[in-house]
Amino acid sequence: MVKTARILNGSDVAQKALTALSKRIEALRVEGKTLGLAAVQVGDSKDALLYSRSLEKLLTKLHIYYRYAQFPEKISENDLEREIEGLNKDKQITGVMIFSPLPKHLDYVAVLNAVQLFKDVEGRRILHGFGDRVISPTASAVIKLFEETGIDAAGKEAVVVGHSDVVGKPVAILLLDKMATVTVCHIKTHSLEEHVRRADILIAAAGKPNLIKGKWIKPGAVIIDVGENVLNGKLVGDVEFEEAKNRAGFITPVPGGVGPLTNVMLVKNLLTLAQIQENNGNSNTH
Ligand code: NAD
Image 1: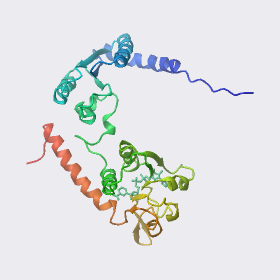
Image 2: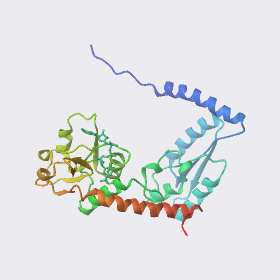
Image 3: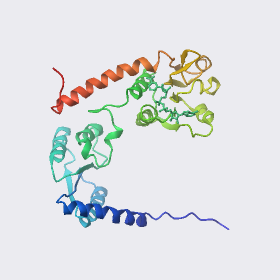
Image 4: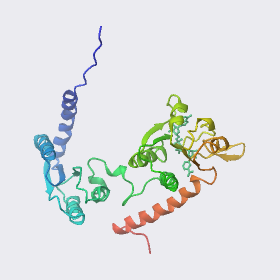
């Protein structure tokens, strides 16, 4: 007998979720609080307009204020950012979303960063630490070391071992932004060796001494070893350095690789934070 897949019905799940949300929205309305959404569209797009209409239909039903903020295709980045600042300050607007793609003359990350963090309804800004926010100093150090190789990550197999908030996850996102094909391995990963053997770029951040065997390394690979482990009174990484260095194209030592650069990136982040705080009138600098 042919076994067919169970159909996952989105409409049913949506209806259940909506019923629960409606109660919360109604409770807010009783307290005199309303929600509002602004959707920013640059230029004409039939698809965006269709989507906007379906969104408006749903929000209207829920008594949520909706504004389709459409701007001319040729709007300058400064003008668009000023318009977004207006939405940031607008008390009727709880959340702002930016319809993409944006025209080529606009810098996507800069426009995104114009949306105030607490109005970023799609949670996009969290993926773009650069700009007026900071990202894990260790992840920045890893990427800076990778950039030293002069290698283009686009299309390369990148394997990140470790998925912590401070190393694995942000490094994976930054490598994705460089158009690498990224695999993230962790404690539950089956056959780590298989993944590592495919890696043109390997970021080791598991905190397990010599977890990555030298013989697993693909010839010519870039190896960035974030691990810092004390073994027999000595600081060692996650990669078997002596064996790996004879196969890799580039490799960072432990100590003396990612560690020292991490601290420099930390200082850079402090400077960025001071600047953000000054811009927001919350400065502690004298
Ligand atoms: P963590 O403990 O938060 O995360 C470890 C990650 O490794 C997890 O995702 C876990 O699932 C994975 N992992 C553990 N054992 C594994 C195994 N056997 N196979 C596959 N995956 C495995 O650690 P962290 O804070 O991300 O730190 C990782 C290492 O990097 C540590 O050695 C730490 O000291 C070092 N570190 C160095 C710097 C630096 O600047 N050089 C900065 C931060 C962390």
